[in-house]
Length: 544
Image 1 (cartoon, one colour):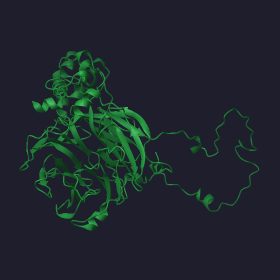
Image 2 (cartoon, helix red, strand yellow):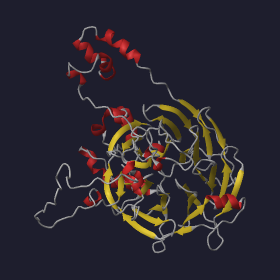
Image 3 (cartoon, helix red, strand yellow):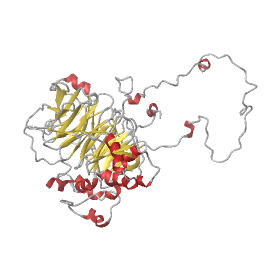
Image 4 (cartoon, helix red, strand yellow):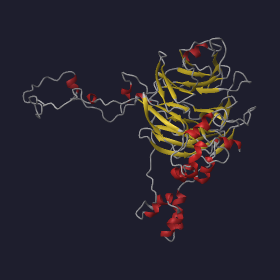
């Protein structure tokens, strides 16, 4: 794969649907790792499904939470994944092992979390009705970031591209730029509408390349700014946005916005329907509208870091949008010609001779002489698309892919199976003891050789003046995203009485809405208890 060839001469944005990824459970949020090789999907039953995006297959399933996963973020090296669920828990996961390293319990629901782009020890958390919190993972300490108005705590926050600054925005349109290390105020400005009225900040997103960032506001306009200009203006500055993007015809509110991998395009998902609007950043013109299934509500959008591919979530299914690939055989042979009918081929003189006797030997000069030089085939040049502008080498410790082990359905039926050490990890002890009388004694040393899973340390984060009875927007009565989404999309494999579930008006209190036990298995669903608890609707869970 030559990633350098992605800078094509034509458009560099998706044009059509390219299939779906069915996680069995209801998908709520998704995010790519830094290279776009893995896609993590947070589900309604608390599981995190990691897809190998090149093969479009499930590489790993982590039974992460009991409640729905509402936010996900990868670490820079891809080895860690931080997740938040609607029961106010933030967890840190080791992607290779699937173990939980740390947990943090917050008093209010988590709207968003983000790993520091460079520092693997810091995580930015945006609790509901609270100032943003900067977590330090090594010592489990936290710092509450300063806000502009203590009475307005509807604050969103985001790291800039390299994590040097944190941008926060409140419901009054005030943007603060804070130094990440000292939390000192560096710059500030207010987002105003044409009539000098303020508008609430819904989200702040930064491009992977360049210094641009966008602000999604409640007035249904996406404003694009240059970060360098913001820092130059300083406190109470009045920077002008580079672009103002909006749907003038339908006045569409935007659920989720993000930049393309190269920062040249901006995609925004409609909050009314499954529709994706794509603009060109430099000009500000709308280049494409991608329409999903009518009647579905969009939940999340993510653009692939290096390719013109978009993943969107609606009705619990991840939809993939990509370019239309047209076969061009002349790319492999410049003199290739496509024929409508058979033509008799005329062989040229000496065309298939091993050596051309009539060819004269010219003197080797310039490029011909260079062909005799030794070619270095051992050193590996870094892929430019995987390196930042301030880096020369790739991160060779990065986790790009997950190893996949074959699944053995009935290991005890195979007498010539794996060695005892390997069999001891997968085969129940009582089954083996039936074949060998002293099975328990023989299996004990092998099971002891496996290090026991360490229990994750849980830290309770105390925040002053934060209401503890808040309900996450995913679970609230206001947002139909949960209730409608559940009835609109169903996991495959439903049987029996639960087939009539889509016609139930209110799946509350004790209704099992996930009949995926037979499909996902005990390991994926975390046992009957996990499935039963995950099967409760989120609204019912919260009410209980």
